[in-house]
Image (cartoon, rainbow, N blue to C red; front, side, top):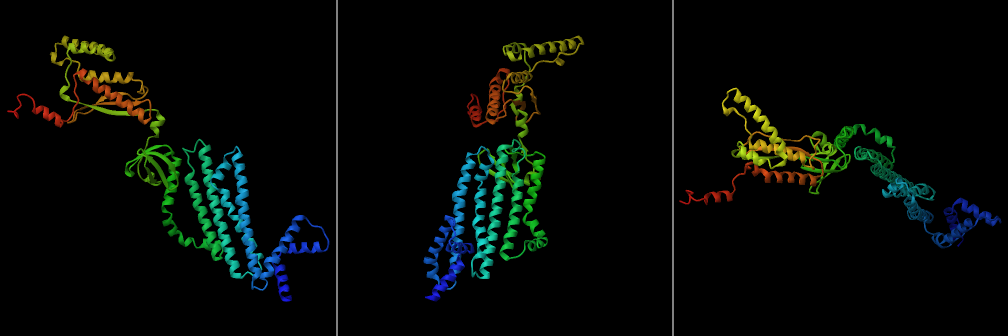
Length: 462
């Protein structure tokens, strides 16, 4: 019994902190102490009576008890940090009018840092545990240091993500000058440093020893981070030359990409195509290969309409006087017909006075008159931008007809209004074309062949 008591007394002295033993001595001498210390002393007596003394005869009991107490303290600190401190800070952030604290809480920066608290307690408390083997002390301290380095690295990475969120929401230059790629580069550097510190902590060596060996690994690192280096240079060029922004409509046929840029990062560019699929392009490909950016069209304020009517060349002819008079009922070409009549009359009068053959006289054609009508129609259309290039031109004849091309710009650059405008213009032109005695070229279809065979007097019927 005496041995047990003496053992329990030694165990009590080993497990109780020195300041708590001193406080017990002061109480025995009659000195009054705060209620908190007295409560701790009572808790110490309960632990001694129900935990320490029953384990007095077990080898290394004091070490096991101290380890359990250390683990309990670490768990309690982690619980208080997450369940109390983070909850309070989160409510304060929601109540605050500033946005930076909301971004940090949204990215769980403080939650990552909270993981450091129990690791610090274990790192600092393991030295106070009596009888811990040297190898166990080394392992615990190494793991704690590695965990702290990992937690801090993840917290810094989340902090960089929060800074990017704040920049995108508050800066008007966010779409023109995205910083996500540069922050990702910083995150890679942070992860490399954290990896060096973690490995150094686990093997028990100085980080400088590992850094000195990186010189021999330069070639390997260049190979591993080849895409990262190429993407970094590409990101710098894209940003400095303002070649790409979030929201730009780009077209890259080599990558089968046609849509809006939704994200620009260090390694990839995400594009949402018009069919709502997502294409991912390596950043460096936008420098090594060509792509079309439609931002200039959107900033210019006009979208080009460049389409042609294929006129059947057999329908092109001169207009007689009766046809010219009939066309005067079209108000848009009244001025053109008057001006042309005067011009032709003057020219032909000079030819007649010179005694030239009438075959040399100039006459109005249905194609030229229709081209003048097309121009007048576009000039009067409210959906066509009148301050930009506008013309109707005749292209080189082809085996499929004579192209009569409309070249103008719509006043609305949005896709649906643009297509509606182009369709309305050509609907009207196709409908009014017969008024000028013109026909569109169209390859014969099966119905055309059947109709030709069914004509009276056809040789096939005979």
